[in-house]
Length: 303
Image 1 (cartoon, one colour):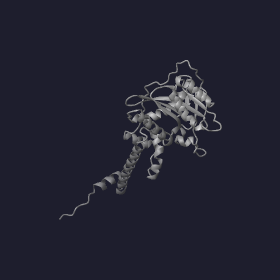
Image 2 (cartoon, rainbow, N blue to C red):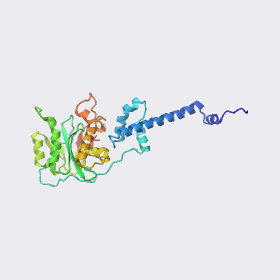
Image 3 (spheres, rainbow, N blue to C red):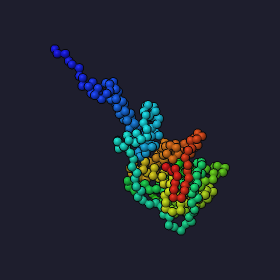
Image 4 (cartoon, helix red, strand yellow):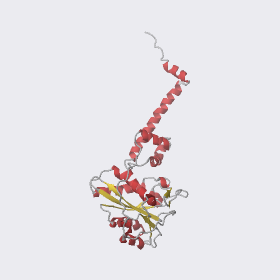
């Protein structure tokens, strides 16, 4: 029997490139480890997106920090962008098609009081807006009231029409937190000049709570940027990824999505903290490093 000669091909290749066999094997072991880490990250991203279908990569990176630390995975934000891009998991924005604001009416309009204004605490500035939601069978309307400082949705109502009574319900939900208080906090309410916000019933409710009324001066969405942004988040990242058969299903889904938005989704504009945590003041000194203020035709540090 002939003696089997060792395969010297790998040794020659290693000598040719000036590396040892050990370095060669370590290189491939590192590649295998990296592939396993990528698979773990992708699996966790898909898990997060079961409840947050269109959440962006920056927020994902914050939500993945504990997971990566637990599995001893080192990955920067740019690397996560590249990984999601390769796997077709980046999110693209959708265009808005339906106009919901009717500002050409005879009702009294109020001046814009928040130009250059900076909210320094929760319940100091409420911003309101309405957005449409195109479901399988019809278009529904979402009325929202949001705290400008914390980005928490403090009042909401889902309707099948644009009647003012639905916006009143959303405002009543936001104001319910003040019921029974000895004195109401001085707050300002800001909205567009839509006929629903100028209606007597809506204005009377604000005045009953001694709330200052502020409105946009033209059709520029930057004058109500926080409210516009929250509308986009709810629809683009959550609602537009589901099909609902009727109003009852839509209302149940909206309630669940707002709970997730308030309690789980980190916000870039508030230091990657959740709105509920900011609103309930569960912050340590130095955590609040963001600003909330408007300038004419310019919004600084908003989303």
